[in-house]
Image (tube, rainbow, N blue to C red; front, top):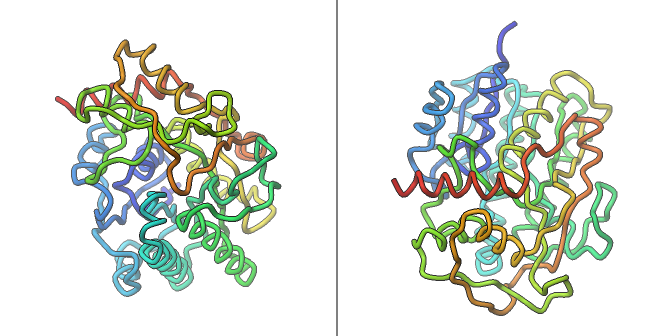
Length: 342
């Protein structure tokens, strides 16, 4: 049986690159990437080849340019499915530059959907976010939890993106889409050869911890210590990036194997356990033996106090659950940090 060809947008990015690795490891897929490298670094495809033994072609195409996007579909067709990651994702930046986020995140999605329609691509997996729920009082969240008021423009772009896909799927019943609302991806490939890397300063907790632990940055700040949580710091549902990647592969198979009963379906992806920022810092120090130089600061715009997930639907229908725990997250991220140093 011929392998299915899957296009991954944002394939040089953190989750996109790990998903390419999982698709290759699965053995049932040929893969191609689109990434204009505006928020990712060169060398990712070399690392993927080192891990998997397979070379992946990346098109440095701006997805906000419809003509250029469609040219990739023409060159690579027929394409059996798209996994769409490409988006700006920095919460504080989205608060400062909302129009940048609306233009990029929504225009790129619209162009991908348009290309899928023109070139008869039947399946799309959309990288959504737990941030669409807003500040939730009743935890853990489920797929039935009402979508709340977005705390930042980034989250709002994900809400709008989901709405666009629901509307398109309703008018195009042969088009199949899954919206994956996931929580906080952390860690690195267990080989330690691929992990989170950005040309800009990282804004996410784990790479900041790693850079502080390795001495790349002199200190770090815990943003907010007066939230209504068990230690005052924000609580998040951290999940290993390989588990997130595995969920995308399983979601794709779910559609290809026609196990879905709706053509637009939503799944939460989380561990079900909330971990506070201070607890994660303490876990890092305990597991690696490295002391962290950090200070306690004020709240950061766009952050909510706590959120974590019930992912039973993904477990029941996709056959997915987390394989890696906090220790794996920290050890793999630390190994990647050490390899990066070398």
